[in-house]
Length: 331
Image 1 (cartoon, rainbow, N blue to C red):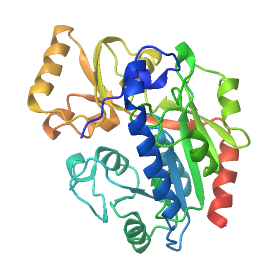
Image 2: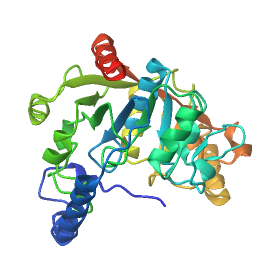
Image 3: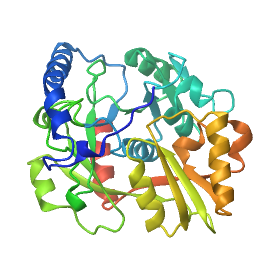
């Protein structure tokens, strides 16, 4: 399933989208009530090792997966994912040679290039499989609203972009009237800390945004490229929750973007669309560049001709992050 993210979700202005917001608000009340009941009734299973949950409060585009990868890398942990978008239900360990994004989901397939990754629709079963497979720390990619596993540390990742009236929570409405998975106050109450992802060219977070988090500790991180963008003109494309941020980041990194095509999150690229992308690149005498997450969804025969742009989460205060993680791991 692909999800197209409305830009108006992330603005506090009345227009555009106010009519749609009003129509969808009753549905959002039902969504919020069902989520709250599921969380309240959940009993977290303990699996014998610390579980670090890296989640978010919105429907997508916060940057939680790069944060989960960085935390797992620092701890030497295994990542546990639901495997969204994949046909296999697990529990199983992702094999980057044998499994495709269609099998296990694009984010697990991407992460498995660097780290041990497990997928399971049943999170406790997946956690037990990871422990049996040698994991001494589990980093759960997503799951802040999933109460089935007991968590040693709950982190929520928030997009810190607030320029041009962008606001990470929109006007605070819950899906589908807005981007929130649950009301902000309820989600923050279960969080041990906030990871605030700032654009690389923004020195400090918006004080108004920091005030929203109250007494919840906040760590600042930034998404930075692992390597410079490809040389020469490029046609970029991305099927992520906020494709416009990929375009902004590529331009900020110095990429000579001749054109950029946005797609819905987890968009499947069929042969016809791939031909259109190559045709567009040929018009500009340009290469093709996309996100690492999109690249793993491409047919294997086309991957060699498209550049994956890999990014990583870099923390402003790594010592504070390590101290927070150490407290959770040692109990």
